[in-house]
Length: 383
Image (spheres, rainbow, N blue to C red):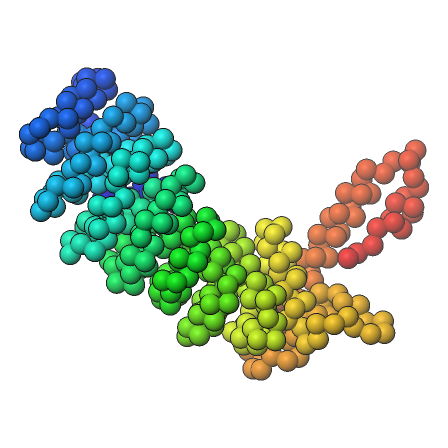
């Protein structure tokens, strides 16, 4: 099967079977003639040709757009796994990076047979169906249509019991669909979080799979049912924290966003659950090395995780160091506290280095005709 890309189904890869002597226009015309034939063997050959031609060429995807109707008809042929697979793969390649074809495939009625293939006994057909829904769900126009088609419960079921590749494509499709508000409640009703956590735990935390799992979790913990499901699942919060520590920049942003949403919704209920799994070191690192959004969210979450959510009396400032020291004093276990203190020291060092560079830059722009050097330096303080 063709290789996956981030959210749009497939990556185009060179096809050694392409004939160097056949011009694209003649090959396209031949494929269209075959797919529009009444002969089933010719249709099958046409689908295979369309799949080959559209693997690397956006121009061919445009020229072969007229094949969508006949290919969708092939999906409805009874008891013909070969026809189903060939048509699905051709449609899949037609839809990659082509918004018009994505919409046209759905409008042609492809969803009903594709969704039914999620329940197929053929693992290949199930995988191709999940990949197709992943690709089609990348279109904003298709998201609400797919959501109301009955696909979501079957995608969650595939996430539970499908092949490894079908599980990955299903969670990515669900992540795509979750960006449309009306789909979130449907996803929640299908209870996907245990299966998402099961997929997230062993996967590489810097992978695209981990990113999509955390993006989906971040959306779902905006609801009480989602928060309860994540904290009830053994290792659920820990899996999110591991992504916060070791994920890609985007994954870490989703992870800290999920934890912050939980703590903001009910600090008393979720504070201990987040703290006990050792979130502090990762949060400290994120305050200086994450995306701007991640840094802001990490600072906010550290404020929420301290012992008292209320402003401190007297002269004790709510510096990050004070907040973290307060949290560290409540952590059970020397290992976690020691690691957090080490991370705090490193964070302070990085912060000082950044402030020093800023000070040097400020000094460079000052000239004798502008301000005296003493005036330049006195205006800048380490933060």
